[in-house]
Image 1 (cartoon, rainbow, N blue to C red):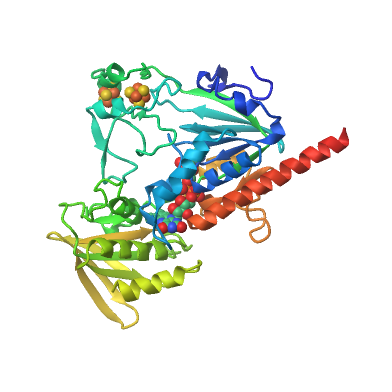
Image 2: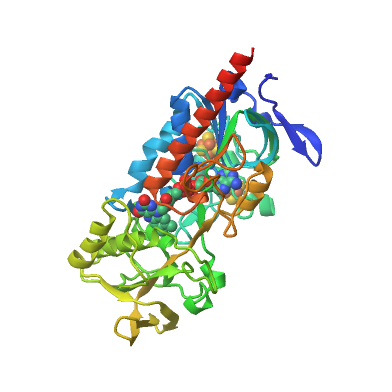
Length: 471
Ligand SMILES: Cc1cc2nc3c(=O)[nH]c(=O)nc-3n(C[C@H](O)[C@H](O)[C@H](O)COP(=O)(O)OP(=O)(O)OC[C@H]3O[C@@H](n4cnc5c(N)ncnc54)[C@H](O)[C@@H]3O)c2cc1C
Ligand code: SF4
Ligand code: SF4
């Protein structure tokens, strides 16, 4: 085994070998430990950091717990303020991270332990079961086409269906499938086996076990991103997830996306009809210190204006209402974007919170008040979109405990100094970037990814020079 990476880990306290990692860590092992960096989280932030470090000649292990990289941006339709197609912008980056000679992707993989010291950390990782031998799989997709078991697609936010053997999206990097054991007929009932029979290279492995390995790296960048606040369970006043035509903003992205479940056609979930009156509600769970999150989720004003515009581009005779508390549009070109939405797209902004949503016939009744006029408002909408708060991804606190860094009361990783060292943590050699540090847009996420990469480079090159001087 290579001197620099130990391909063993611990399971139930016993050392185990990671067969999956054999063979594809050779490149990673080929440089000294102080020229290797681990990036945890493969969204736009982590990908940006990994490519920057790779281009600087450092070996990078990019770890994501999902089967492919791209993060939330892969789920977006078009992005403010320029309305570029998110996938067209992101795919060259995901492909580059997958093909970069200095970047090793470890997807379906999680960090479970950390030892060592800044400049020479040993990270223990768990490789999750995919039931597909990715070393054999060519990504041809035959198994996905033949699989008879279809169910709700997580990537499509319940708006679409997917097979039990799946990739997160058609542009997935790596483009290798995995099996959902809860939906696979063979793994639940011992019947089917169609994918194994149809796979031309014998890559399906129903007996695959999880495996463990460890990687030695000089520095670590954490870019684990965000999730959407659990409004379905925490906000009964908005229907508690039981009114089908009340969805959140991320689900709206999938409806608007040309690669989404409706191929970009604007329909409502309950009956597939085009919604003619649509209500957007901002600050759902944000800026509500009494019951939910005290902080502003920063991008909701902008993506709501984007949703309203994209909706109007599809439903020309549609009527849009937006409930808002304030409009916060602080990025470059953002204020103009909002003003254009109001003037050119004839979107009606109502200042105030919608208090209650309920179903009446095939309508969603929206009750609220206009705080500028003091009048009560009731709208019979065809569909309602909630700009739900953004929260740190599940497991952030556990990861912080493993890495020896800290989270604030809301679960975002704490920086060393918010103003002067915003991507550094209290622990040397460990950096944070993107939405896991605090909610931000794609531009700021990319900038922080690059900032964290550059801080890791400065730390490792300084350490190297000091070590050389000491010899
Ligand atoms: C509805 C909506 C619309 C938006 N529209 C826009 C827009 O138009 N323009 C714009 O600029 N911004 C927009 N944003 C914001 C944008 O989505 C974020 O700025 C961006 O996705 C942040 O990227 P990230 O890499 O920090 O996090 P993420 O995209 O969340 O990526 C984090 C990655 O880390 C992985 N991960 C998490 N935990 C672990 C772990 N423990 N171990 C390993 N991997 C882990 C995840 O699987 C994921 O791949 C929008 C946000 C929402 C909710
Ligand atoms: S064995 Fe499972 S994953 Fe494979 S085709 Fe059948 S249901 Fe789909
Ligand atoms: S059929 Fe086999 S080779 Fe093709 S994608 Fe499925 S597992 Fe991979």
